[in-house]
Image 1 (tube, helix red, strand yellow):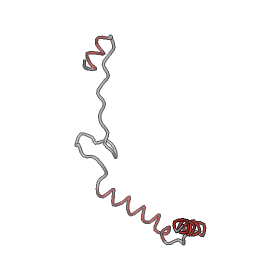
Image 2: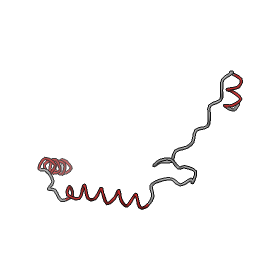
Image 3: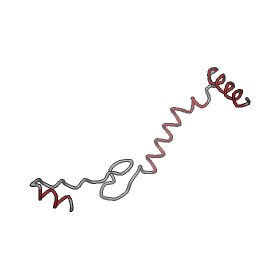
Image 4: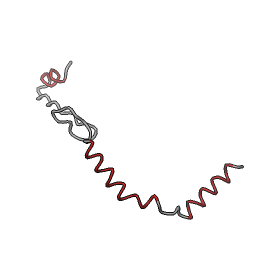
Length: 76
């Protein structure tokens, strides 16, 4: 039995259908989902600008020691 008929039978108002929302936001009436290519490009540039320096930082000594310990434990 459909939700509409089931709701009527119980004397309740049927629930309104909800609009599906796309993975990255409201699909709207155009049916398009996701971010526009220009917005994706802008976000990418901003992320690179923020995190570019992190890629050039030295690896912390604690991480180097953990990697060394891991390599040694794999040799056993």
